[in-house]
Each structure stands twice: as C-alpha cells, then as structure tokens.
Amino acid sequence: MSRPKPLRKAVLPVAGLGTRFLPATKAMPKEMLTVVDRPLIQYAIDEARAAGIEEFCLITGRGKDSLIDYFDIAYELESTLRERNKTDALKALEPSSIEAGSLVAVRQQEPLGLGHAIWCARSFIGDDPFAILLPDDIVKSGVPCMKQLADAYYQTGGSVVAVTEVPRAHTNRYGILKTGKDDGRLVEVQGLVEKPKPEDAPSNLSVIGRYILTADVMKYLAKLEKGAGGEVQLTDAMAKTIGEAPFHGLRYEGERFDCGNKIGFLEAQIAFSLDRPDLAGEVKEFLKKYS
Ligand code: G1P
Image (cartoon, rainbow, N blue to C red):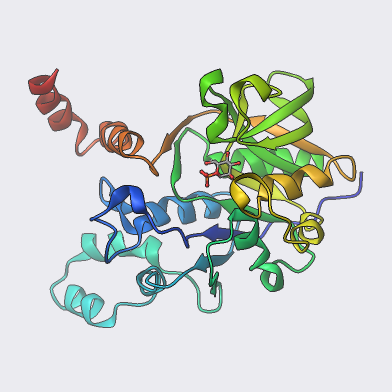
C-alpha cells in the first residue's frame, strides 16, 4: 500500500434550518447552540484539529453568517479584555480563532441534501482526502473520535466512517452498513443504505456524523442523483465507491450525543457538565433534586 495522502481538510455542513429547535433557531444557527459553554460548531472544530486537520470549509446557507463571524477576530471585545487583564476570558476565546486563509465558506443555495452539500465543497476538496463532521453529533471520548478515524485512515489507506450499533427499530434514521469482514473494531463496508426500514436494513450498524473519505466520492456526487427522501444522499455516492478502494466502518470508542434532537441535546448538557471538574460537583448536587 502506498502511503495515504495526509488528511488536512474538513467539510462541515451547517446549512440546515434547525426546525426542531424553533424558536431558539429563528435568528441564530443551530450550530451556535451551546453545550455547557461552547457552541456545537466549536466541538466539531476542536475534534478535527485533534486529528491534525488545519483547513476548514463550512457549507452554509442564508441566515448562517454568524458562524463565520464567530471564527473572526473580535477586536473590541479582545482589546477590552486585555485592558482589564481578563486573561481567563481571553484564553476561552482562543479555540475560536482560525488562522487567516484556513476557513472558507460556501453557500448551499438550496437544501438539496447532504450529498449536495458536500458536492458544494468540490473546489476546496480537489483531489485530497477529507473529513466530514456533522456538528449535530458530538462525541465524548478519551481519544477524540476524528483522531480515531484518522488513525484508521492511515492504517487502511481508504475511506472510514464512524459507526455504532442502534436498535433495529431506529435504522430508518441513519445510513446503515452491509458488513463484511469484522474484527470487532474495524468492519469492512460491503454496502450502504440510507435510512432503510428495519425489515430492509442489512444490519443495525449505523453511520454517525463523522467520515473520512477519499476524493473518489466526488465523481458520484457530481451526478446529483436523488435518493431517499428525494435528496442527493452522501450515502448513495459513498456506496458507489465500494470496491474501488478500501472502505471501513470504525466502531469508535466514546459516546455520541445527537444534538439535532432535544433529548440528545439535553443529555449532552448533563454528560458534558459532569465531565467538567469546575462544574461536576454542583451539577451532581442539583440533579438529586430532580431524580
Ligand atoms: C445524515 C446521513 C446519515 C447518517 C446521519 C448521522 O442523516 O444522511 O446517513 O447516519 O447523518 O447523523 P441526517 O441526520 O442528516 O438525516
């Protein structure tokens, strides 16, 4: 196997309307909703950076410009904090700074599906391998999930998606794997189906919002064929690359929270605050009141 190309790029689709969180998301992107004290988009950027990723492409839509502002310099705020010697507050801002030229944004003018969103990043991707992080999903783990995927990418030299078992009744919410050789951690992908009914699902191994793909997928996305729900599905384009290069699912270590729905979002608040030494004690204490 020749050495895989280094993974340096990530695409973050953030064009969704966030209808499940209205009215909160009426005038603000859902990716700016906070878990404890950081917006969802920050979790995704931090995780990508931990995997050595340095270049980011946001796939945005109308009304999403505050996501770009978030990664800009906040001169007034920062100089006021400096004048007042608020070093902790300045430190808290650090992760939201991205090197000049390392963040680009592309507008997906119409909501035509996740596959279409990724296709909008074609100039950014070029011929390079790239990560996709869906910021709705956040993963609490020892080794950041994307770093686990990157290690698997360098090991296998092909595409890798993060997978987890779901109850059979839930297969219609996810991309589902048809599995081949399986060592308990890495599983060969033989097929992929978008949101199959439980009775049609080839397994109960689902794809979460973390992917590393080789640029091969782009030629299939470019066909803009519609799949499940009448949308251009990333899952369908990925399925077409099977057989051309290695493709694996990685049973990542960690816990995923689907912050695209209310219960997942609320659970994430609890789990992530209990993980914080500065908050855990008091949170545990007040939770007793409600159990
Ligand atoms: C998307 C993908 C699906 C994947 C899921 C992970 O679905 O289409 O294959 O399993 O993300 O969160 P969505 O959640 O956008 O409906």
